[in-house]
Length: 322
Image (cartoon, rainbow, N blue to C red; front, side, top):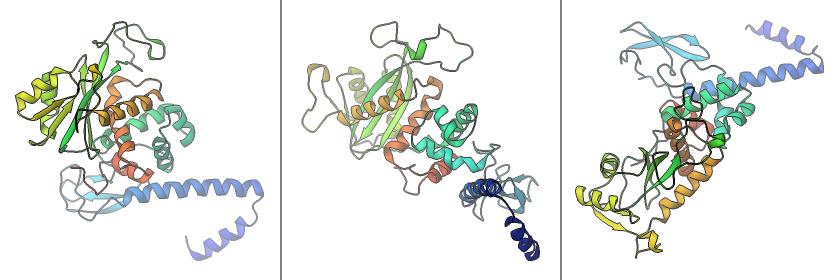
């Protein structure tokens, strides 16, 4: 806009009544929020950004699309932005993303977050799992030293499914079989003494040696000391992969065995289950997303709307988790 046109606009604004001024402030607030979200996303772009279609770095700026810089790849002649190929691609209402991310940091339910951000509940649900699709990948690569491992069980849930294989349970309900059965989903949690945590959804029913072998060896150091409860599956697993193992017989009332215990991992189980109860049941197919969400809260690595938004497109805090 030219300076003369801008000065003319200022004169027109002085003629607005109170209601019109309030409406103008509201619209300017939306634009400011959209700019803030766009600036946060745009700040992730570097001069060496590669084309998501062919991987070439031979590209140049090519206008703007939905408040984001658009690029043209000279190799494949296709255009893209920083969101192309990410879970946030083709989502609208960027001005509400940061407010929605803040609602997630407060662990609001789908409906609560929808009210906070001013979107439909279906949009709230879609945004939640788009944001968590890559954010759940912010996890340790290795556990060191004394590592506690234990499993916890959650009732299988087909919440939201249109084709259920069993009769629906009211508000989650309860299992029809006693003890651990195929009605429950096993979540294996391993946690070292530095607080690094890894979790795995191993499937229905009790954890098996084969499942432990699939999950733990890639993340355990060779000199790690594995501590578990009295479940003999861990003992057989430790013998098979030749790592040191200590068992704490919780069923006999033993809580601490010298320097060994599983209180850290059990405390994490308690925090996880209390937090999941807040959502009145979580569909099993989305359970990995919620586990990643909980880890982000527990480690405080994703503690701002901006960091959560960056994690949604695969950019995590600089301090690496090893």
